[in-house]
Length: 223
Image (cartoon, rainbow, N blue to C red; front, side, top):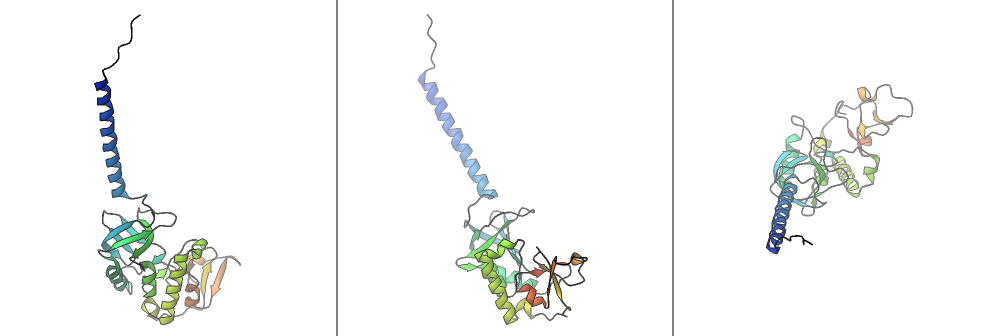
């Protein structure tokens, strides 16, 4: 009977060593890719703010862009755009930041969505407290979040103090409209609320009354 020929053990050890080297190399590459792309970072991971895009958006060191969650600040050319942008720069530029994610972490543009903290300062809330943005929600259950409650309280404080955006004089409408299921407040002539059926909308006597409930101004009719 012919016995099978066995490979020398030194070849086996070589294959094992080579496999370990390859595995380590793959692990290093994967870790570096995750650090660069960062879609699956855990909540409260820390980043450095490298650039201020506008009043509610920053670029992080490494290239990711963060859109501050649940707030909306003026666009370029609108009143208080510069003030909102400068405030975000003052609070966060070149600072080590902590981001808290809730639900979906990226929007359709690939931007991160989260609450921004610098040390113990909740930046999203501070922007609303200074009257330089509006609370901006999409779903009913968001009102139950602790952070949203804090931000709504900060917005109400700014409204009472009539600072920032709340200091702007506006010609009042006869009334304002919210479509049921939406967090936007509209002027009565806005195309978004035309031909609504009875029971599918809510009426507010003043702009402030609607916004104090957590609504935000429609971006089209701009009440």
